[in-house]
Length: 194
Image (tube, rainbow, N blue to C red; front, side):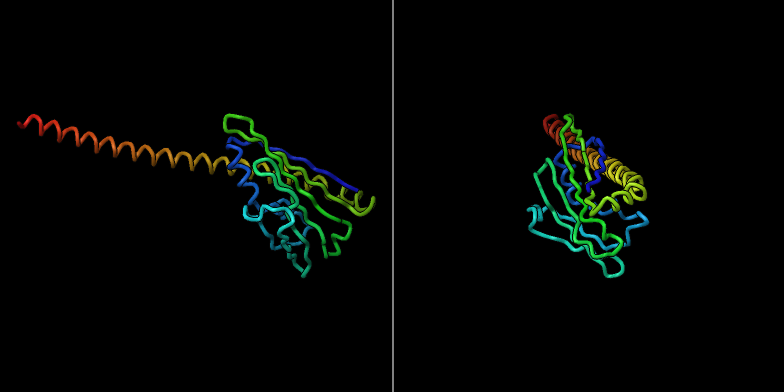
């Protein structure tokens, strides 16, 4: 039985930057604050691990339980998918896997649309019913909050970075203008002294 959740965000940052930022994020933060998910030490993917199936990470939960976290698909600047499976915790015995798929579209003018889909593969109708009654709303809220806050936070970061770069560029221009003004004054004085 599969239960799917969707979320999206728009961000005023060019697609290549957005893709790189989201690819290196810790996607497990979506589940971090849920009461039914035990505390865990979680991995993050880095760009050098962009070959699906090349590297698996182990997630270590409190109580010596684990799960496997892997990259399933990767198409640069378009999409990537991850999967969490092989849960050893008894509380996750009804959960076969969680697949998260990100896709990105260029909206033009330096804006990007981000779409996130999470598929929860459950082992039976009973677990599907438990998911619907106990988890769906909470996970959807966390998914929406995570995506929107991450997008807005990164957008603010990019704006500040851009402002700093402009400020630095203006300082460089002003100092070069001052230098050339001084050179022009020196030249004027030299010419007029003769």
